[in-house]
Image 1 (cartoon, rainbow, N blue to C red):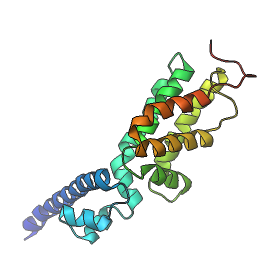
Image 2: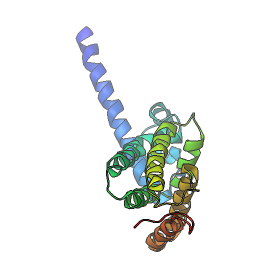
Image 3: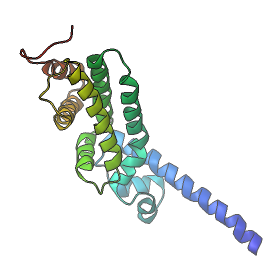
Length: 197
């Protein structure tokens, strides 16, 4: 009897892992089709599990988003670390801003979810979003020290710009590159500030 119990425990862990992976795959599809506001009940039903199982793995929508996006958000942070070594601070910031906008467009409604998480320290996504914001702030400060980005923009304003471009481009994807270009042009130093040679 003890042997059977010992064998059942790993199977239970395997079932839990399988349910976890099935829920993530189903959520990824649902968010791609319906945005991050997709019904969690529908996700559980499509994955073939009960709501209790869903909420055991992901107590909140933010926890589910952290599981889906945490790795890619950490990748965005890692990309900023690489770009800090770039010889052109302005180009480094532009490359990172492009990547950040692309990331924010991954799912419809994601921009709002990320901004809400950034503002809510209790959110499961807060620490990851804050790390990304801090990484962007470093690239911004470096470009400002080089005189290649206007000095009156702070990290919060930069993230508002990213959110605005991502929000608009989500609705008209064909305009994304043009919107990015306008944002970058707007970040040029003003006439009374030095410009990149």
